Image (cartoon, rainbow, N blue to C red; front, top):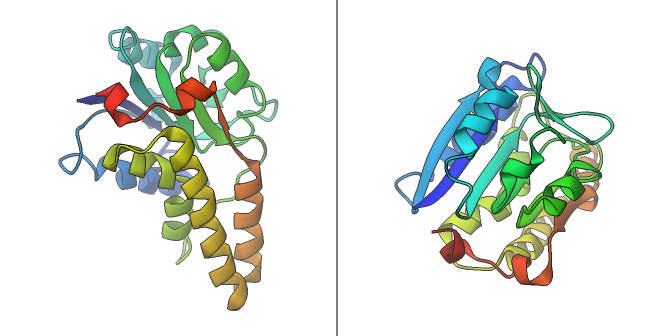
Length: 211
C-alpha cells in the first residue's frame, strides 16, 4: 500500500469548500488504486497531529498532500497553526510532498528537500482557485493531475509533472478559444508557478517505489 497523509483545511472561510473538494478528488482513488489514506482536516491541521501521523510511516517512502493556504513568505503551510514549517520539515524524510498551497515552493520546498524529502510539487507564488462555480472541478483536475496519475500509473514523477503541464496547456487553449479568458489567464499563472523539485534520481521514482 502507498501510505498517504492528506491534510486539508475544509474550515477555511474562503476556500474551505475548494480544499474539501480537492481532498475528495484524491480520496476517491481509495479502492481504485493501492493507496491507504490518513486524513487530517480543519481544526485538526496542527503540527502535533501532523507529526503523530507522519512519524510512524516515514522510515519508508510515503506521500504527503497539503491542501490549505501557504504563508506569504513561503515558509509554512497554515491552517489553525503552522502545521508544516521549519520546525517539522525533518519528519518528511522519504516523502513525495505535494501541495496546492500558495508560495511554499519558493522556500519550504528547499527545507523539505534538504531534510530528506524525496520530491516536492507545488506553487512558488499565489495559486488561483475559484471559490465556487463550474470551474472548480477543472482547476482541481489540473493542479492534482500529476498526483492522481501517480496513484493510477507507474509513470515517473517527472513524466507525470510534464504531463500535468501539457494537460493544463490543453485546458488553457480550450478556455481561451471560448469566452473564458479570465479563467485561462488564471490557469496560465498556475502552470507557470508550479514546480517539481528533487534530484533526477528521485524525480524518476514511481508509485512502485512507494508501495
